[in-house]
Amino acid sequence: ELYSTDGGRLPSLDLEKEEAESVELGLTYQKEGLWAEGDSLQLKATVFHSDLANLIVTNGATGAVPRYLNVRSAEIWGGEVEAAYDAENWFASLAYSNVRSAYGEMPNPAANGLTVADTPAQNVALTLGAKLPDQGLTLGWTSYYFDRITTYSVSTAAAGTITPTATPAYDTHDLFVTWKPETGAMAGMDVTLTVENVFDADYKNNLSLDRGEGMNAKLTIGKNLTW
Image 1 (cartoon, rainbow, N blue to C red):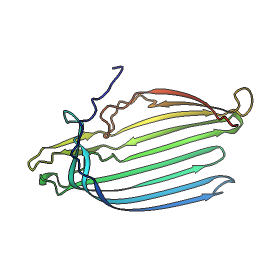
Image 2: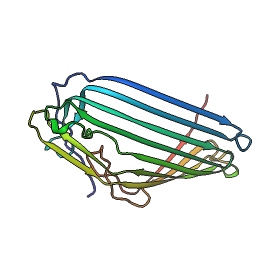
Image 3: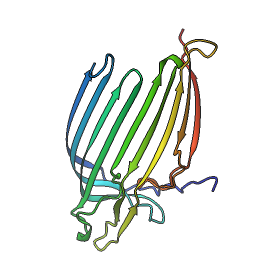
Image 4: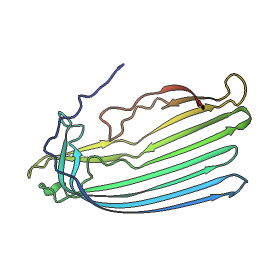
């Protein structure tokens, strides 16, 4: 399959305005000169909780024609944690996200408490990299892991159907190299090579209508101009 596309979504002209009552708490920490001169550590944590009315969701990829609809009420909660360390010759970052959800007060009581269709899977991203200042090189590796998740598309009818969609866990890995020469004919240029999905994993994100892209490479060349 060389090319792929979806047919878009059916217009939903009768949607009600989504309303939410949300609480969010965040903490940040930053420290420089932690283990070596010039290094830095950043930490960030966020938790949230939302009660929603007229939540706008999709009817899921199993629908004949994907479209948006309102559900009477839902609850969404979760948290995110991020950490990043940067030093003269290396850097690392870690990000973790866990979002949960549940339908509430649905016309079909069997849907109450089930996971909302557009809920992202629990995921982790880890980046490790090295710097070679004398050569103007930065290179690194990023790994992504998405846990398995089962979400539910529901009908707004009192006896409407409930359709589960199970998405298996998967991981992908990216490689990147950036070259910023400071001397010579290429001075001031910014050359970046990125190889995404290095191991050509076959996967599908639960929020996507189509399968993920296979291994692909991108080369970008840029230059800052000042006048």
